[in-house]
Structures are given as structure tokens and as C-alpha cells.
Length: 107
Image (tube, rainbow, N blue to C red; front, side, top):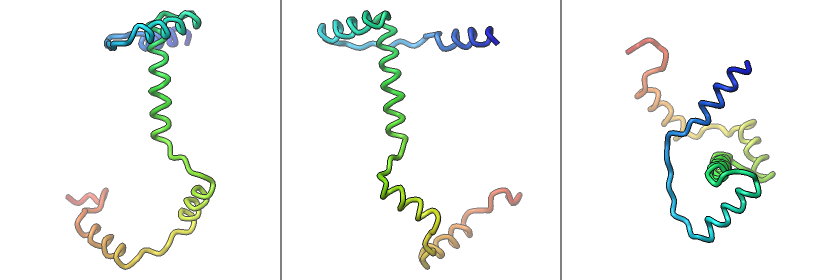
């Protein structure tokens, strides 16, 4: 088990891609100071910071956040859906006629 985690760490630590960025002198000094305070190299600090920011951005953009009233309305709609309208029923019938049933074995 311990050998697996070492191998997994090696796969994660393998860095084959390169990124470059131009920054101001002040920005580089700021980044370097923060890295020094954390006991990291500048590269490790930047990679960790960018990784954390990317994960946070994706999480925020991929998560639907609802207020309490919106959450209740959503749950209510799921638990007690409205009856389909005539237009929706007609569209569903057209769809079924155009799209072969999945898994029916007919081709």
C-alpha cells in the first residue's frame, strides 16, 4: 500500500508541460515573499495558487446555488410537477415518432 502511494505521488509530481507568464517586478516580489513565508519555491507557490484558484472557479461555476425560496420552489416542482400542456404532449409524440427507441434492438 505504501508503495502505491509513492507511485501515485510520482505520477502527480511528473511535470511535462510548461507555462510562461510576464509579470511586473512588484508582482514577482509579492509572489516571492508569499512563497518564502510559506517555505515554498516560487514555482511551487505559483502552481499551488493557480491550482487552488482553478478548482475554486470550476466549483463555483459548476454548482447551482439557490436561495431558500428558490430551493423550495425547485423541490416543489420536482415533487409536484404540473400536467404537460397539449403542445408538450404533441412535441413528445413527434419526438417518439422520429427517434427510434433506445435498446429496442431494432436498427
